[in-house]
Length: 87
Picture 1 (cartoon, one colour):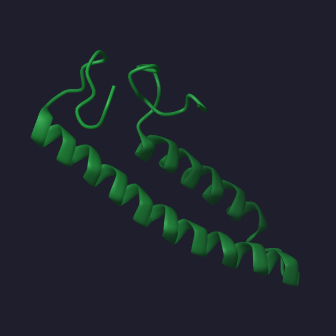
Picture 2 (cartoon, rainbow, N blue to C red):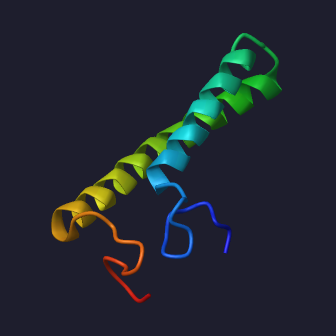
């Protein structure tokens, strides 16, 4: 397992929405460096980044919704017992 996400074995991991937001922010920073490059390759990369950013925005919203659902239904996560699923 990668160890990026918070779970029973990795209580110091990150929430999915935090990782996705960090990726989104990095893409935005990188895209601003090439947005004035008029070459077709740069335009293609910028256009692809825009599409990726839209997918990330949707994914972030879904991850935040899942966190909200779990928080409302089960409260704070305890490191010894999963809120849903098997341990």
